[in-house]
Image (cartoon, rainbow, N blue to C red; front, side):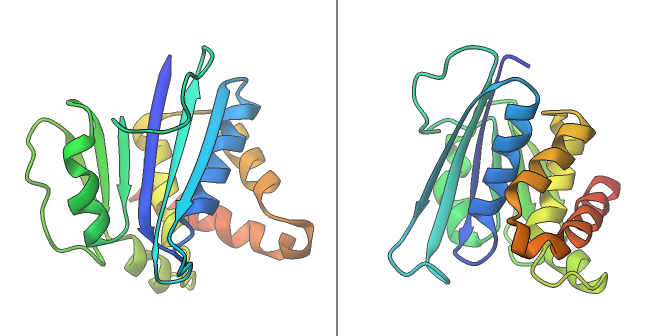
Length: 177
């Protein structure tokens, strides 16, 4: 991998920024150059949120991802807004629990992942973001499994350390689906 530009998008409260942080820390553990740029509306929970993450072997010129290699869309407005920006040959991961619309492009790989329902059915309500992260890891191999776990551990504050195992399990569910 030379460069991987990732755009995660959805509603505030879906863990978009947290997922981006896990990816960024995992990239750092991998020895990559990294940028993490969160963006959210003033409403926070329920408003729009997106996060640009760049992983590279070289210096990163701009942290803003305008043409993502990977788009994670966790709500319909995000899919509609960013689908056209994905590079040809790129990857779009759609939370099909929430989004029923199909991607209109045929020059990208699309993964429809029932992430919210998978998370909830396994007792991890609210962890659809981690299910998606697991699938994105499977599809892209953006880091080693060990560094993904280190990135997760680094992203969870000590007072919430009890959540590490449930997040690990949600990531595993995504890798298997």
